[in-house]
Length: 332
Image (cartoon, rainbow, N blue to C red):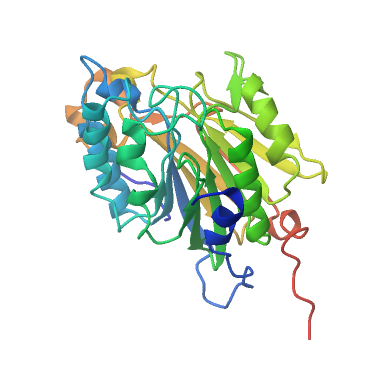
């Protein structure tokens, strides 16, 4: 099988607690400019009555540990009912990558209810900030713990991931703006549960909640070049222009309606900074790592997805796109 795997308190103090990333570095000779970021959408059906249970999630996490992946982002709806039992099962699965693979999680509507002022929940008990305090690249969380910021290094530079609550409050938005202000030179990826939705023809538009998040945070911050959300089916993608006149790639990825609830299917974003492109593929390690001769027809069908919204290439001149907040050093 041949793959292309290349691979805390008031708002003011919360901002201060966030580590400020160093300025992005120029690419030294010999640095590998290729790396992959993994995105894992709604795994909720695995934990519902009659679902496959956590084994597909274990298989996906084992697969990622064996590959060269710089970061993993879960898009929310980790579980179906947000119960302590379901969340602890998911928590034990993620324990296999704690300290080994940088990752983020966020709350979807099936994990919690209300907005990020909801207080303590079973989700927060399992996946709250305490889980990440010693994690490499963890910059901090919003005062209520439902939004988090992460930094990872790949391709010779630092990158920022904002994992935002599915119904982020105004306080959460102010916190996220503070993170960006504290790390002004880092290209940023926003992950959340509900931002955009697509129809069967592939037309992708912002959801009602997504329009608020776009207007209050994303469009105003040129650092944000990519957003990824789950929640809605089918998958889709579009490109929007921010207030600086630059492209923001907006992607929907969710496979809970597929065989075995999507079987912890992942999407890999293969960055190639030298060639100015991101190659995207979507597949289910739980099926794909089995011998092809032993797969059922449904397992074969869902091993890899090849539709326009699942396998595609983005062409990005990274130097030009990031020049507004990370200008190229002047020659000496």
